Length: 139
Image (cartoon, rainbow, N blue to C red; front, side, top):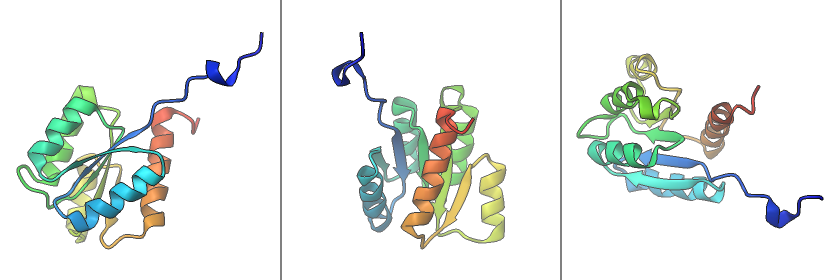
């Protein structure tokens, strides 16, 4: 007997956490991610970002290094140290664009570092590639 469309369960929506204190960044990122079919949560400070990450286990975190309490670098390190979040991808989307800042983010385990201001296509390219890696479809 052939499966019907009603027998097929759609895959769960991928979850993205945007951790940034600037609504000028979070609003367009949220719109872009939701238009691409992702479930989005926003955190305006580091404490909220860590709480949401632990509770929802996002597939990807878009992280501003200059977020506070704790800062983005500490958040990256804490996510990487948490075994429950080991599959979470992290991309810094930051105005901290010195080579030393980028090197620090990558050394702490980030999967990418995008400089502000950014192009929508650049963000979406990173997101799609990383989430494909997460679901194993690249193999």
